[in-house]
Length: 313
Image (tube, rainbow, N blue to C red; front, side, top):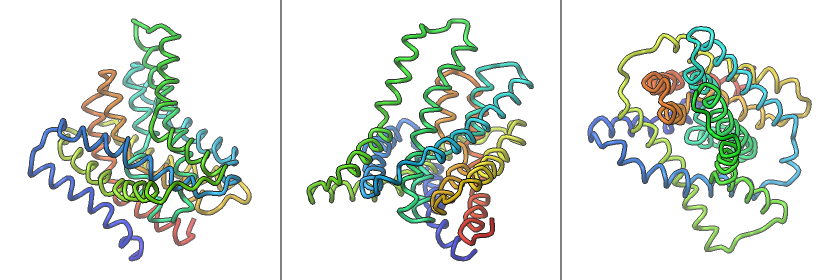
């Protein structure tokens, strides 16, 4: 356990520093815009690219892994969606709650934590899970929101918008570039590779610090009753389901199994709040979900890492 604490303390320490900074300085959320842009468009894509470009091509051909992790995420999403639908009969609010239970912080917290815990071997499953989960996010959000909206957008325009978001997302582009480089064994020039390395090294500390600042600038006004089941589903049920399903796969590398469980165990992503704001549904409670699940994940993620790292599952 001491080894796990030594590994996660610096990572969560960066989140804490961000939180304290946000509480002291009172900088508005608008001040984070350029930092978020740097992380999403400039720093994290080189990290993903470098991990995948150095990976043997045959490691990408694992359709069963992709199908199983995606099935798990869809199952958790619709579990939370139908619970909310049964309780309040509101499709928009139910959609946000579905994401709150199934869409973890796979961009900011996932890569640094998985790589620190399981090494570079976790890079491929992390990147593939990220691409599939974001494809789900880009697809389900507009589709379900359109179902619950009286003023439904034109179907073709909505589908084109979904495709555009998927094929232009910087993480997905970085994944495609990394797989392409791995297939031809491309080695970038040393100067360019040094720049990519520098940006990749900046990704994790910047992302974790911004997580803390964002939590500080969205104070917890009240705890929604839905969190009684949403937080346990996200932090416990989702990773447990992923583990149980993937454990049935023969010859799955342990790094892939562990990375997938860890990605499922992450707290609700800030994007859940962004979706809520975009569609004006469940906004304040979505913000509370992100803050509360992140707080409890300090304990739950430490326990999951301990169980995985010590072969206790």
